[in-house]
Length: 180
Image 1: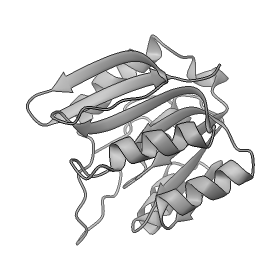
Image 2 (image 1 turned 135 degrees about the vertical axis):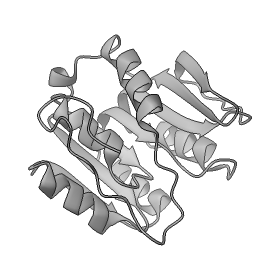
Image 3 (image 1 turned 180 degrees about the horizontal axis):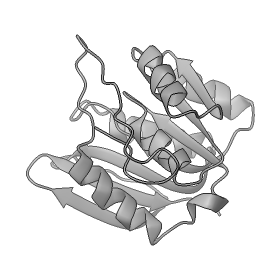
Image 4 (image 1 turned 90 degrees about the vertical axis):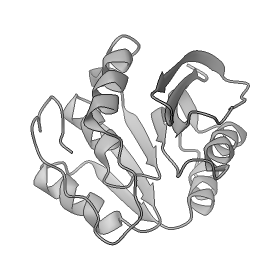
């Protein structure tokens, strides 16, 4: 797993040991960012939120491509994210450890909004829909939300559906647009 392009191009990311994680494959990540390049200008993206961040690969890729800052949420892998951000020499990262729902609610109370949100929870747990619903309820989205989920999971939202991409039998990515 590596950063594909930008300031930290080619940096190999550390991955957690002894944790159950399912990092987004380089192939899926390359395809996703190719789609995103047609939808947004990363240099005009002020704030990225990476929920269920794992290694931090999606948020770090966004910063490498020009996003101003990223906030990462994970319950277990924050030291890995911190290490990957330091190795990439990115000091514009906020890394939050804990329950995603509590953290999102706190961010909502603070009036935070994000231009780009990634949600990549464990598949078939209901957390993809729950994170999408919370982002809407708390008015956290000011751009695009990208939800990676199991291909058999069906998401619903009042956000505008931009695109759904299915990779093989197991992975789907759904992109929604919120308030802009």
